[in-house]
Image (tube, rainbow, N blue to C red):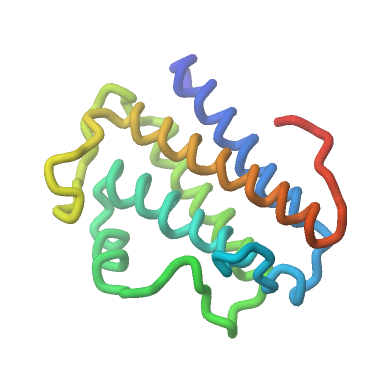
Length: 165
């Protein structure tokens, strides 16, 4: 990867991904599945959402146009915020890591100025015009949710994340 901008963007994204996982380290299954805020989402639900609605959707489907990812997204009807209760926390964390790895494999050779390979009809006329915009969107989404997890972790057991990434 020789593109300095791409390298920098992926470095920031990787830092935010690590933040998401690091802030949850040490929580048991019960705490990870406990809704803390009135909206009812859980820490595991948020990580599952990031894996499917951000990493898989934006990178594998939209950016790369990967047919299998598109078919899975359009056909699943799954609510990413509500992972299957039969999935363990480690399985959900592994899914998030794996989707990040697959995204990075595609992005490592991507042209940030290229148009997304696929765009879903359900967005209507709105769209991102370049992969750069997609990457920036996922960085923003991941950073926002990392902040949510910081606040929720503090509510669960008082732990605060002091390292800024």
